[in-house]
Length: 59
Image (cartoon, rainbow, N blue to C red; front, top):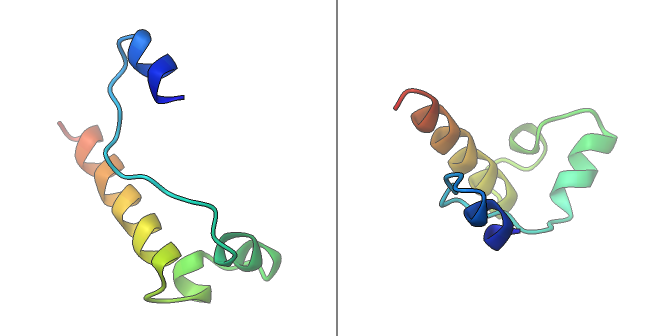
C-alpha cells in the first residue's frame, strides 16, 4: 500500500496502526477505542493518527 501511494506522489502519514482486538470490540459496543480501552495501545495509535491528520490538514 505504501508503495502504491508513494508512486502516485501522495504524502504518507507517519503513524501506523495494526490490527488490535480493541478496535472491533469497541465498535461492537458502540464506543470509540479511547472510551472502550483508554490508555491501550489501540487508543494511543488512534490518538496519534488523529493528531497527525489534524496537523496535516492545517499545514
